[in-house]
Length: 197
Image (cartoon, rainbow, N blue to C red; front, side, top):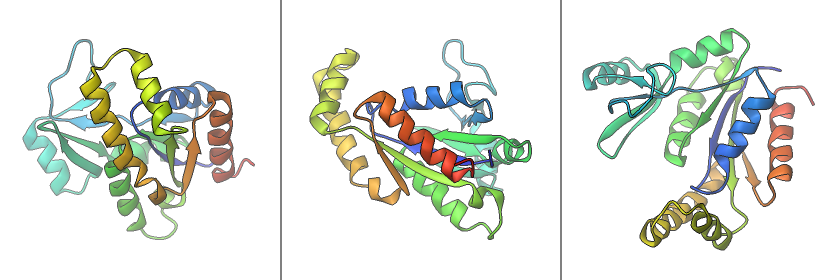
């Protein structure tokens, strides 16, 4: 499998995490991208496993030196994707899976497009948007999870509409109407992009 930089985005509740988990289970040559953040570790989170936990100064230095594929401030904390570990994985023949929002995906797309022709990250870049069958189905799934208040569900649905409005920016779109079919479609995209199919 040719190394791929796999960027996946989706509205909350579309099933992206489940699809990512299935990919990682089936393909040991795909590694999950670990982001860096300025927020403090929570619970059992480990540095270098869940996130790279950085001071604001260290994070700002990474940004200034162009060492991040993308970065953003979310709820007052900075988050970003270090380029170094992605390049190291590529050098070892590994693909890298990034599970990020549409804004982060756009930043990675822009970064990769600016790389010279022939750069492995540019050659292996593939971005995929996971869609729910409908907003009504998404509402049903969010309610079914039983994790959110009606107000939070309404906010998630408004955010989902904004994300769906940007789905056309992605090279591939997979509707997660039935998990097995959606996974097969996702898998086929990656196998074609990596030159296996």
